[in-house]
Image (tube, rainbow, N blue to C red):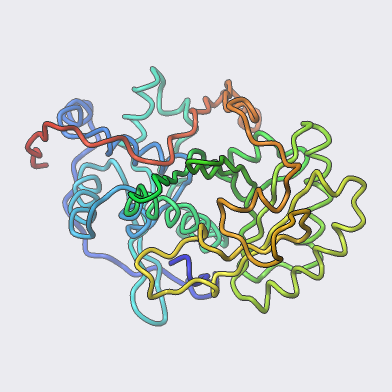
Length: 362
């Protein structure tokens, strides 16, 4: 959950699972998938390709009405080899199932864009390697951040009294950010939060408490260089595991921020996971947990909700449709065959079809 931050050392080894009969990834199987995969299924495949790994709870928050429907459909996708899964070991309790893109799912994505699977740079062993990656907890934490925002918009899509609606309109992975901005800085994610009144874009720095505060704060220097190169001032949000960690980080960030040549081009705000109420139905970073590092607002100092953060920096220009170009052409993969970069998937699933088709058994 977004209310707590999982530390990497809590994920040691991986539980063996019982073998389950799965469909062979043959040409006939690929043809059969055409009658089985819904628009939501294809969206899940694109989401896994973009963000590498998502848990069952995250996928439920993002796309399913209940845990039961999520488990049933994800099991079908697993049996059809559209997705693969693993379950990290936890000292207390059981970790949720973690899902990655499977071989048949990669074939479906490639076919949609008229490509071969190799053109995507996909390999099943590479996809599954995240299970043993030292950044697994960090990657899952970023997924928690955004899927909790998506869950908030799904379960309370509009305020009937004031007509207030919210939506995540952009969610770029760390890999996509690296391709766009990696020569200057590599954000953990780029996102946009839309409400009836505002549209707010931000870079996310997701901290698990393992990085030195000196290294964390010096990222502001790189963000200033990015703002200078692009001519775009974009807020940088630091999400930290505890208020104690946040207090230490704010001191380090303030010292670096004060030394920047153009402090107005790097608006900064911090928040801590333990500020959220874990008993709330759908806690999320959209709540009043954000504390600007500096503010030119006339309102009473204090924490802002995500939609209200632009009020802390009245001079911050709102994003436009072309603030950051999402188009990406082929890119060389370490001197190997060119890899095609697919466009980022929408952060919310496509609407369900009004005419539900009976599910075909595997």
